[in-house]
Amino acid sequence: MNNKVLIFFITHLITFNNLFGQNLNPDPLSETPLYPIPTEMTYEEYGDMNRRLSQAFLWSAVPIPGSTHYYAGEKKVAKRLFYIGLGGFALFIGGAIANGDASWPDYDENNHIIHNVGTDDERRFKKIPISMQGDIINYDLLEIYKEGSGDGSLLMALGAIVLLGDFIYDRLKGIHLVEEKRNQVRYKYGQLIEISYKPTSYYSNRNNQISMKLNFDL
View: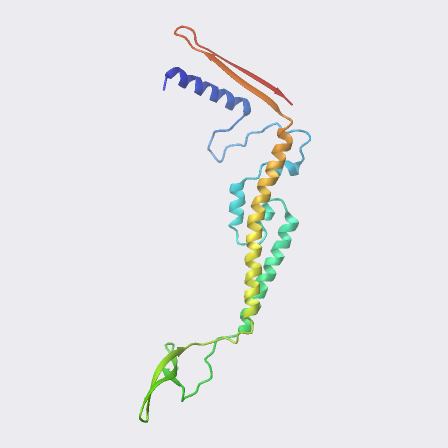
């Protein structure tokens, strides 16, 4: 790259950065620069304009229903989503309790075989007749497992659906609201600013000139 072109680019970049007060300092502990704010802008609009999608994604990672809407400034909706999620969780727990502890099916010594009786490795099998040779019956063994009552399965499924739907709605709609609110404020007050930026330059062997014309109307 030609050195003159490089100097031209760097000069205009620095000039434009200084004019608009952009802070290129990556130090997170440095002070936040203060920018002019239109007198018509409310504090709520100022908050909407400065919300970040990166922060919205971080809030979405919090396993609490309504957290993304809370960051988006929709506190009433966030509270409603929290209670809906709490209700779904209660349904799930209630269903699990209604199912009760898993237990073995009723034992029939003619149809069942038990291995390792009374131990942690106890296993039960149901005898399935497969053939007969004279008076001798051959069986195949089908393992059986402990089962709950099943009375709370519907409540558990309903609770899981409510809780999952609540989380999905909060995340997708909340992130959309952050972006939408920010865009509305920027569009509203961006229309009040009219800026034209026209840099010009002239280079020769003995005469190098740089000029810039900036017009703005608030």
